[in-house]
Image (cartoon, rainbow, N blue to C red; front, side, top):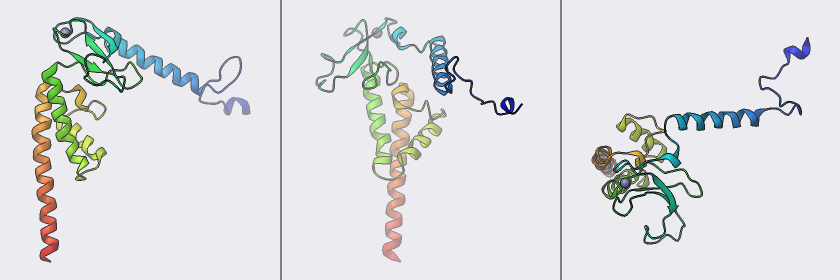
Length: 182
Ligand SMILES: [Zn+2]
């Protein structure tokens, strides 16, 4: 009876009896991968959003002027006619966002620069800046990353980050003036 009451919430691995936490985690990971495949998130099946051709995983050599960091990219099969690609996370085959053409890449870089200024200048922590970004874009924090943004959202981030930075600077200078006067 006692044995039955003390039954572990995690199943044991048959036949060795090892606590099955690792099996549980592996199963969870498989479930996420299956879900992603169902949703069409399998990077190897990714298609170019501009011309519909498959995206090919390859080295960034010949695309980046300097690829001393050995980056890899998903590149549109019609490159360079269709100048679309997305970088992968270092050492993995996971894309760091969605494929982008030159115009969108430039906008994402600008948006990142404006957004990063908010936390790099110490006006807010990086965590708070990402919370602010998620609220601005009305997205969950897990999806509020500039690598996923459209041209419209990039422009919104550029405008709102610039205006937020101005307000932060103004607020900081008002506080300094108050301290000097008092
Ligand atoms: Zn393409």
